[in-house]
Amino acid sequence: MSADPNCIFCKIVAGQIPASKVHEDDEVFAFHDIHPWAPVHILIIPKRHIVSMVDVDAEHEGLLGRMMLLSSRLMKQLGVTNGYRHVINTGPDGRQEVQHLHLHVMGGPRPWNKG
Ligand code: 5GP
Ligand code: ZN
Image 1 (cartoon, protein in one colour):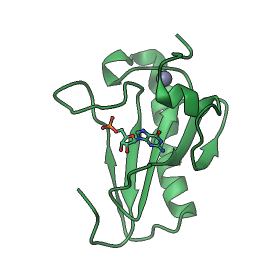
Image 2 (cartoon, protein in one colour):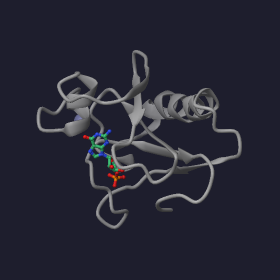
Image 3 (cartoon, protein in one colour):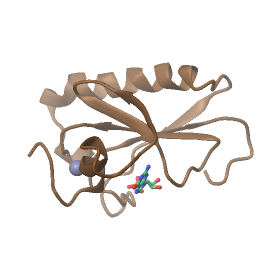
Image 4 (cartoon, protein in one colour):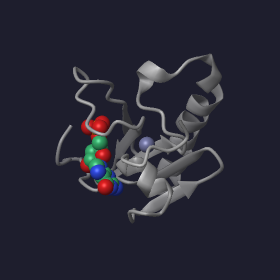
């Protein structure tokens, strides 16, 4: 499935719901989290609707690599110079709330709101 009409992140990718975009290319979209845990908190997502890490396989190796590499580039671009944290929540026990794969990247000076 390339887009799920009921998925909030697919709607953000399609421009149907506004978001504070930090990056877009052919495969990946990145934007600021609406409830940031840290001074800088972005979400990096595949444009295609992939529910979670449960649904990825070898075919997604390049995509996942691109998301990770992009995270360091964007943190630098956003002025985060003293470290940051990556989080991916997967499934019910991982407390995943939005069912579209997303990489949280959080940074900026402590204290943080959460985490
Ligand atoms: P999860 O718990 O699924 O890993 O994280 C979902 C994240 O998406 C949360 O941090 C939440 O604040 C963020 N989020 C949910 N809805 C929206 C939205 O409409 N816009 C933005 N920018 N972030 C959202
Ligand atoms: Zn989606």
